[in-house]
Image 1 (tube, rainbow, N blue to C red):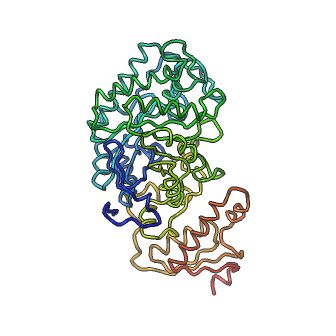
Image 2: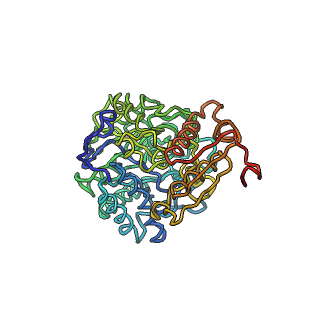
Image 3: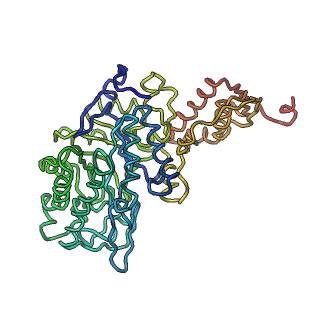
Length: 474
């Protein structure tokens, strides 16, 4: 269990420094940004909810200060002949579910008990069939959106207020409005998708009007002792979208409303280059300097998320003044104990995220259950660790590729006396070959981590040793 009053190590002076954001009293500078829809559902069976909450609690116990993990969807009114489309699109909003207060309350109570703050996003991502105008946001969307009229805009403004009020009733500490990654709010902010000629389009002030009205309604509903933040793109890389200067201007105008407690800035889109979840061929924290430009232009606390994949990278982003808080999602999928290990000087034991995005593509693209390439136990936190065997036996693992390495380590952790044979001169199998390709260095880091893990566990590793039948019998 992480303790707030424990002395922070000098190597991570900024990372473990307390901070107050709005009403959130954070014990350090680490947020887990939303990835709940990949992990599993809070809104299914009670067993689903228990597994979901256990995932977050495991990471809070290791030290995470702020869980912005669960995603709440706005009710998506569907006009005749349309269906919601796009990554993350939902038809029925979770804030309207009869079980919302119970389940969100369970999430909040568990996270608070473990020592962290709990917030939720409010999302209408992939907001088809609605938009500020009928202009498409990307080349792979072929369903022309319905341009909201003023009455429909007023309905959505009221619905955002209701959602924030529900979050507060459930015991959450705040809400984050999702104004990026093809959300309806981003479409209003963007000069590309907002082609309106009324008071909601044209100038930056007018394009911001929808969001400003939502913020005003939310504040009227929840008051000032409840944290409200905005997640937005630093810039829109799609031609016709706002550039970095435009993003800074929008941020300054949001700050000037006096209604926002923090800005959570990211980069990318579902359709662009970069993707909004940058894979391994981008540098860690590649756009943190752009976040730093925005931070220098506003006084609001800045959260930055974008391939911050290790405590060293996180500390650098904070030390260079590019953000006040770092968002770390996939790094915590790979290793729930990342912060505890960093705090204890055990960085070489942190299971590295390799940025392959299997955690994302399985759920959103392939329709498969949530999983992580490097962490086969992720999502099983409610079950606890694998039990130790009562009567350990000797085990021979043949082959030191990814499967053999993980099998040998899991068996040793359960108490088996393990020996591993690999016929090649180095461990890793085909994955080792892959590391010679450009931008696959994280995979090499993972293989090296596995070798260190086997050594700590006392696994007898033999390279250059073939497992023919006679050798196995002998």
